[in-house]
Image 1 (tube, rainbow, N blue to C red):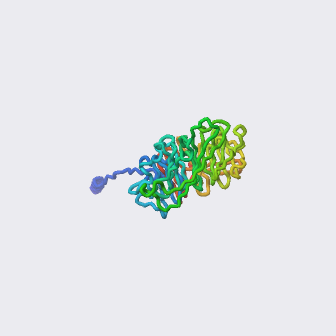
Image 2 (cartoon, rainbow, N blue to C red):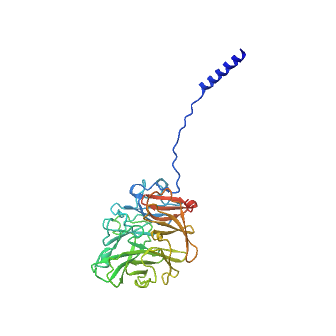
Image 3 (cartoon, one colour):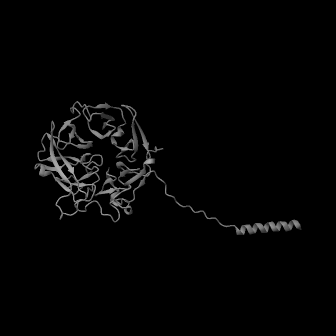
Length: 401
């Protein structure tokens, strides 16, 4: 009887415990995956297509589809935190006049440096005509117009091959000289034409109304350059690079030319039949006093005396031809263009003839084309066809697994 009583008590306790058991519901909360690169959210709609990006004075100067804007997210910025230190978002006045948008065609990239950019005419989507509007990057301004026909009555248009971020229609060097090409009525001429313009802006505020002035606050002084060639060259493809205080111009089929700020020039790759320097350059950069010019087919030319002489090095990966190069910290960084999954990598010269490439993390960027890369303070930015992205400098050099 005692045993039966104990058994009944145990069963009663078990039943009570079962009746009091609490149901536990498992809830799964989705967490966004953490990527190496994060998008700068203040760029909206068409602004997310970043066609060019050039560092300014504590700023990033951005050519976006149809507009120019400035991002300045560092201490002491003149922009406001409420709009993300970005001129194209929220209550701030945009840095682009609605009556004079930048090109809508993503192939149409403009000359730009830290202090100025040149906006083509021709409704911004096709070849420019004979007017460029020069804008300072430091403030809103109505712009100063460079009238080509006022310099050369035979001019028909500025030259613009519409190829994209790697090949803008001209270049502006570090001393604020602008170089562009143009066509004339003499299409059979054995020569091609350039216009070199010095840009000066000492104003502290921009001119924002035509009632104050008919022109902007930038002063222009131009000279024309005619370069003879063995045959007709006006319509030959040309590409432009600013290097320190001079320019390099490649004229397809006729050679590589060095253009100085005083308007003098010289061909720096020998003859086209017997080249002693770069032919068909795809990228140009200067690193630690040495000029590097990449050529199709895996060839790199180097010069330690600003094109007076060259050393040719062969045998590199031809994929380098699709890259551009930028200083980040004390390293040289390359980005690829026109590939489905573009790469970011460091390039290190081991000696005079060999290099080492190390691919860096690019997760979070998606399937986009890259335009430019720049360091601003302790952050690295990359412009793409689908947004502006950033990554802390402290983590930027992490290798891709």
